Image 1: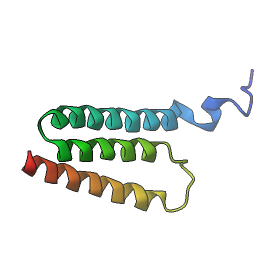
Image 2 (image 1 turned 180 degrees about the vertical axis):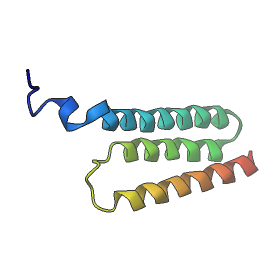
Image 3 (image 1 turned 45 degrees about the vertical axis):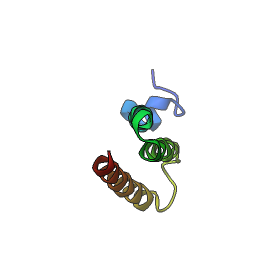
Length: 91
């Protein structure tokens, strides 16, 4: 029996989009947890990390077909890495 054309597995074999969304969410939760821990000792770096967690979470919710998304995600990853580097030197 053939699966219906609107079956989720037919549109996205392996559920890659869902796994990607979950990965972005896990990353955002990790940044929020680290931000909460840093917030106990240092206010500004902790708030920065919590803000970065929100940006990461929002990036994970972007539709995959949006034009220029790859540049946006690349810029966000570089930005997150730079913020993490700056926080690591101040902490």
